[in-house]
Image (cartoon, rainbow, N blue to C red):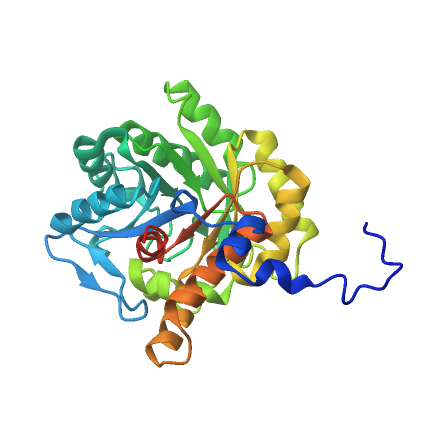
Length: 334
């Protein structure tokens, strides 16, 4: 520490470093780059795209637009995209059978992307049953109870067909106990030792997911139900560390905290405790709030989006899943 015998002021002036843009850059502790961004994309099994009213500026991408979006992501040098399907209601069943169909929307989309772009960009696939279940839950249900072990068996099949299709990173978001180890073993047995697992390790039962459920069409299926018996309670932080520790022991290559801004404390604790690749999801509700405020002229969109993304990095995130990814990447490259 400096010798403050003379008193901190006027010999110490904290504003000196802030006086010039070059000086601020020179001493910055945290920086945000395009390589920190992952772009979630909604895919639709039809040619034309559809806007998502609760996510202004975000669309469910049809077959002719998904490749354009991926091409744009490559041009911006975004390192990875995350694919989320909008499943036809006629394909949704109690047992979520479509999740294990090797020719489902996700698998066809991944094969198409890899055929056109190869290894130019990473592809992340969500592993959970809610896009395919008629009840909107992430797992199988019997007598109103979410079945943990029976669900894991289906998740393993889902992960294998996604890896077979060319997926680079399997991202289990279901929060079933023990699923990471089982999925790792299943992938390895099928020759997919190089496929990564990014675990949604600390995923909370949050009120910020509403627009996402609108986008994938699961809100109506879930109805008045909730996911509190498997997603974490928002009051818990020590529990999040336990969840992360277990997933790492089972073979997760990286972990995720979801949602983002309301859980910066959890993000920071996870990174400081484990020092492993740690990601955060700036979820649909966070996007919707910032977008709505900007549309109404209450906030500066660019300034607040970049500030929010920088906050994730400052708290310890190695990367951010965000619907702002393409916008933010374009701003950062200016």
